[in-house]
Length: 232
Ligand code: ARG
Image 1 (cartoon, rainbow, N blue to C red):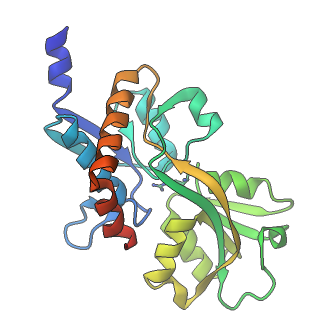
Image 2 (cartoon, rainbow, N blue to C red):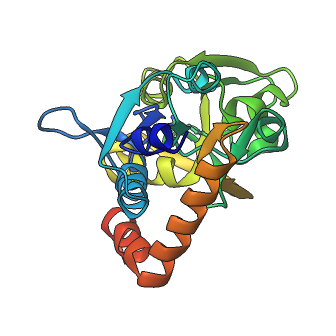
Protein backbone atom coordinates (compact mmCIF):
# COMPACT_ATOMS: atom_id res chain seq x y z
CA UNK A 1 0.00 0.00 0.00
CA UNK A 2 0.94 3.67 0.01
CA UNK A 3 2.28 3.50 3.55
CA UNK A 4 4.83 0.89 2.49
CA UNK A 5 5.91 3.07 -0.38
CA UNK A 6 6.41 6.01 1.99
CA UNK A 7 8.44 3.88 4.35
CA UNK A 8 10.62 2.56 1.55
CA UNK A 9 11.30 6.09 0.48
CA UNK A 10 13.21 6.91 3.65
CA UNK A 11 16.42 5.11 2.84
CA UNK A 12 18.19 4.54 -0.45
CA UNK A 13 20.70 1.71 -0.33
CA UNK A 14 23.45 2.23 -2.87
CA UNK A 15 25.97 -0.43 -3.83
CA UNK A 16 29.37 0.53 -5.19
CA UNK A 17 32.93 -0.73 -5.65
CA UNK A 18 35.20 1.86 -4.10
CA UNK A 19 38.52 1.50 -5.94
CA UNK A 20 37.49 3.81 -8.72
CA UNK A 21 38.67 7.34 -8.03
CA UNK A 22 37.44 9.97 -8.64
CA UNK A 23 34.02 8.29 -8.92
CA UNK A 24 34.11 6.30 -5.67
CA UNK A 25 37.00 5.81 -3.30
CA UNK A 26 37.68 5.94 0.44
CA UNK A 27 38.59 9.41 1.62
CA UNK A 28 41.79 9.82 3.56
CA UNK A 29 40.32 10.59 6.97
CA UNK A 30 37.78 8.01 8.10
CA UNK A 31 37.62 5.79 5.05
CA UNK A 32 34.14 6.98 4.14
CA UNK A 33 33.39 6.41 0.45
CA UNK A 34 33.54 9.68 -1.43
CA UNK A 35 33.73 10.85 -5.05
CA UNK A 36 31.73 12.18 -7.98
CA UNK A 37 29.23 9.30 -8.04
CA UNK A 38 28.65 9.54 -4.31
CA UNK A 39 28.01 13.30 -4.39
CA UNK A 40 25.73 12.87 -7.38
CA UNK A 41 23.61 10.04 -5.98
CA UNK A 42 23.26 11.88 -2.65
CA UNK A 43 22.10 15.04 -4.41
CA UNK A 44 19.65 12.98 -6.47
CA UNK A 45 18.32 11.15 -3.42
CA UNK A 46 17.81 14.45 -1.63
CA UNK A 47 15.80 15.78 -4.57
CA UNK A 48 13.68 12.63 -4.45
CA UNK A 49 12.90 13.08 -0.77
CA UNK A 50 15.02 10.30 0.68
CA UNK A 51 16.05 10.95 4.25
CA UNK A 52 19.05 8.70 4.21
CA UNK A 53 21.54 7.29 1.73
CA UNK A 54 23.45 4.19 2.80
CA UNK A 55 26.52 3.26 0.79
CA UNK A 56 27.53 -0.40 0.66
CA UNK A 57 30.96 -1.26 -0.73
CA UNK A 58 31.51 -4.64 -2.45
CA UNK A 59 33.25 -6.23 -5.42
CA UNK A 60 32.18 -4.84 -8.78
CA UNK A 61 30.94 -8.23 -9.97
CA UNK A 62 29.02 -8.61 -6.68
CA UNK A 63 26.86 -5.59 -7.46
CA UNK A 64 24.73 -7.56 -9.92
CA UNK A 65 23.71 -10.41 -7.59
CA UNK A 66 23.29 -7.86 -4.77
CA UNK A 67 20.68 -6.07 -6.90
CA UNK A 68 18.94 -9.34 -7.69
CA UNK A 69 18.89 -10.30 -4.03
CA UNK A 70 17.45 -6.93 -3.02
CA UNK A 71 20.45 -6.12 -0.82
CA UNK A 72 20.90 -2.82 -2.61
CA UNK A 73 18.38 -0.57 -4.34
CA UNK A 74 20.76 0.71 -7.00
CA UNK A 75 24.32 0.26 -8.19
CA UNK A 76 26.24 3.50 -8.62
CA UNK A 77 29.74 2.51 -9.64
CA UNK A 78 30.94 4.15 -12.83
CA UNK A 79 28.93 1.39 -14.43
CA UNK A 80 28.81 1.37 -18.21
CA UNK A 81 25.43 0.91 -19.83
CA UNK A 82 25.87 -2.15 -22.05
CA UNK A 83 23.42 -4.15 -24.14
CA UNK A 84 24.25 -7.24 -22.13
CA UNK A 85 23.58 -5.61 -18.76
CA UNK A 86 20.42 -3.97 -20.08
CA UNK A 87 18.97 -7.43 -20.61
CA UNK A 88 19.06 -8.03 -16.86
CA UNK A 89 18.86 -4.60 -15.26
CA UNK A 90 17.32 -1.19 -15.68
CA UNK A 91 19.54 1.82 -16.23
CA UNK A 92 18.98 5.53 -15.82
CA UNK A 93 19.79 7.98 -18.57
CA UNK A 94 23.55 8.35 -19.02
CA UNK A 95 25.11 10.66 -16.43
CA UNK A 96 28.74 10.59 -17.59
CA UNK A 97 30.56 9.89 -20.85
CA UNK A 98 33.59 7.66 -20.45
CA UNK A 99 35.75 5.37 -22.55
CA UNK A 100 38.38 2.67 -22.27
CA UNK A 101 42.09 3.40 -22.19
CA UNK A 102 45.35 1.49 -21.81
CA UNK A 103 48.29 2.27 -19.56
CA UNK A 104 51.72 0.66 -19.57
CA UNK A 105 54.90 1.23 -17.58
CA UNK A 106 56.72 4.38 -18.55
CA UNK A 107 59.79 2.41 -19.60
CA UNK A 108 57.75 0.23 -21.98
CA UNK A 109 58.86 0.91 -25.57
CA UNK A 110 56.96 -1.84 -27.41
CA UNK A 111 53.29 -1.16 -26.65
CA UNK A 112 51.93 1.88 -28.47
CA UNK A 113 48.28 0.95 -28.93
CA UNK A 114 45.65 -1.76 -28.43
CA UNK A 115 47.04 -3.59 -31.46
CA UNK A 116 50.36 -4.11 -29.66
CA UNK A 117 48.67 -5.97 -26.80
CA UNK A 118 48.50 -9.30 -28.65
CA UNK A 119 50.07 -11.99 -26.50
CA UNK A 120 50.79 -9.58 -23.66
CA UNK A 121 49.92 -9.80 -19.97
CA UNK A 122 46.97 -7.53 -19.25
CA UNK A 123 45.56 -6.56 -15.86
CA UNK A 124 41.89 -5.63 -15.50
CA UNK A 125 39.21 -5.37 -12.86
CA UNK A 126 36.93 -8.40 -12.62
CA UNK A 127 33.56 -8.05 -14.31
CA UNK A 128 34.26 -4.74 -16.04
CA UNK A 129 34.07 -3.63 -19.64
CA UNK A 130 37.88 -3.36 -19.55
CA UNK A 131 38.01 -7.07 -18.77
CA UNK A 132 35.70 -7.81 -21.71
CA UNK A 133 37.89 -5.75 -24.02
CA UNK A 134 41.03 -7.54 -22.85
CA UNK A 135 39.45 -10.95 -23.47
CA UNK A 136 39.04 -10.03 -27.13
CA UNK A 137 42.77 -9.56 -27.63
CA UNK A 138 44.46 -12.46 -29.38
CA UNK A 139 46.79 -14.49 -27.19
CA UNK A 140 46.61 -12.04 -24.31
CA UNK A 141 47.11 -13.38 -20.82
CA UNK A 142 44.42 -11.59 -18.85
CA UNK A 143 44.54 -11.35 -15.07
CA UNK A 144 41.36 -10.25 -13.30
CA UNK A 145 41.88 -8.28 -10.12
CA UNK A 146 39.28 -7.56 -7.46
CA UNK A 147 40.02 -3.84 -7.52
CA UNK A 148 41.34 -1.49 -10.15
CA UNK A 149 44.01 -0.29 -7.68
CA UNK A 150 45.45 -3.81 -7.58
CA UNK A 151 45.70 -3.97 -11.35
CA UNK A 152 47.72 -0.74 -11.34
CA UNK A 153 49.94 -2.01 -8.52
CA UNK A 154 50.75 -5.13 -10.51
CA UNK A 155 51.72 -2.94 -13.43
CA UNK A 156 54.12 -1.15 -11.12
CA UNK A 157 55.53 -4.47 -9.95
CA UNK A 158 55.99 -5.57 -13.53
CA UNK A 159 53.61 -8.50 -13.23
CA UNK A 160 51.40 -7.25 -16.05
CA UNK A 161 52.42 -5.33 -19.20
CA UNK A 162 49.31 -3.21 -19.44
CA UNK A 163 46.10 -2.26 -17.66
CA UNK A 164 42.87 -1.61 -19.52
CA UNK A 165 40.42 0.54 -17.59
CA UNK A 166 38.24 3.62 -17.85
CA UNK A 167 39.92 6.75 -19.17
CA UNK A 168 38.83 9.22 -16.45
CA UNK A 169 39.96 6.78 -13.75
CA UNK A 170 43.34 6.21 -15.37
CA UNK A 171 43.81 9.95 -15.91
CA UNK A 172 43.07 10.61 -12.25
CA UNK A 173 45.43 7.82 -11.22
CA UNK A 174 48.27 9.26 -13.35
CA UNK A 175 47.64 12.74 -11.99
CA UNK A 176 47.69 11.51 -8.39
CA UNK A 177 51.15 9.95 -8.63
CA UNK A 178 50.78 7.08 -11.09
CA UNK A 179 52.61 9.12 -13.72
CA UNK A 180 55.84 8.36 -11.85
CA UNK A 181 55.81 4.87 -13.38
CA UNK A 182 52.94 4.67 -15.86
CA UNK A 183 51.72 6.35 -19.06
CA UNK A 184 48.74 6.04 -21.40
CA UNK A 185 49.17 4.59 -24.88
CA UNK A 186 46.95 4.75 -27.94
CA UNK A 187 43.65 6.54 -28.23
CA UNK A 188 40.67 6.08 -25.95
CA UNK A 189 37.80 3.91 -27.11
CA UNK A 190 34.95 6.40 -26.67
CA UNK A 191 31.19 6.04 -26.68
CA UNK A 192 30.86 4.51 -23.25
CA UNK A 193 28.24 5.94 -20.89
CA UNK A 194 27.73 5.46 -17.19
CA UNK A 195 24.28 4.86 -15.80
CA UNK A 196 22.80 3.99 -12.44
CA UNK A 197 21.51 0.43 -12.44
CA UNK A 198 18.51 -1.03 -10.63
CA UNK A 199 16.78 -4.40 -10.67
CA UNK A 200 14.12 -4.98 -13.30
CA UNK A 201 10.80 -3.97 -11.83
CA UNK A 202 12.13 -0.80 -10.23
CA UNK A 203 10.89 1.32 -13.08
CA UNK A 204 9.44 3.95 -10.76
CA UNK A 205 12.77 4.34 -8.99
CA UNK A 206 14.56 4.76 -12.33
CA UNK A 207 12.01 7.36 -13.44
CA UNK A 208 12.54 9.27 -10.21
CA UNK A 209 16.31 9.16 -10.63
CA UNK A 210 16.04 10.40 -14.21
CA UNK A 211 13.86 13.28 -13.12
CA UNK A 212 16.27 14.20 -10.34
CA UNK A 213 19.24 13.98 -12.73
CA UNK A 214 17.57 16.30 -15.17
CA UNK A 215 16.73 18.79 -12.42
CA UNK A 216 20.32 18.77 -11.16
CA UNK A 217 21.57 19.36 -14.70
CA UNK A 218 19.12 22.20 -15.28
CA UNK A 219 19.93 23.90 -11.98
CA UNK A 220 23.70 23.77 -12.50
CA UNK A 221 24.18 21.55 -9.46
CA UNK A 222 25.41 18.68 -11.62
CA UNK A 223 28.03 20.97 -13.13
CA UNK A 224 29.19 22.03 -9.67
CA UNK A 225 29.67 18.43 -8.58
CA UNK A 226 31.43 17.70 -11.87
CA UNK A 227 33.84 20.60 -11.47
CA UNK A 228 34.62 19.63 -7.89
CA UNK A 229 36.03 16.28 -9.08
CA UNK A 230 37.21 16.97 -12.61
CA UNK A 231 38.07 20.65 -12.52
CA UNK A 232 36.20 23.34 -14.41
N1 ARG B 1 32.87 1.27 -16.55
C1 ARG B 1 33.38 -0.04 -16.35
C2 ARG B 1 32.26 -1.04 -16.34
O1 ARG B 1 31.14 -0.72 -16.22
C3 ARG B 1 34.19 -0.16 -15.08
C4 ARG B 1 33.46 0.17 -13.83
C5 ARG B 1 34.24 -0.14 -12.57
N2 ARG B 1 33.65 0.51 -11.45
C6 ARG B 1 34.11 0.45 -10.20
N3 ARG B 1 33.49 1.12 -9.28
N4 ARG B 1 35.16 -0.26 -9.90
O2 ARG B 1 32.49 -2.21 -16.44
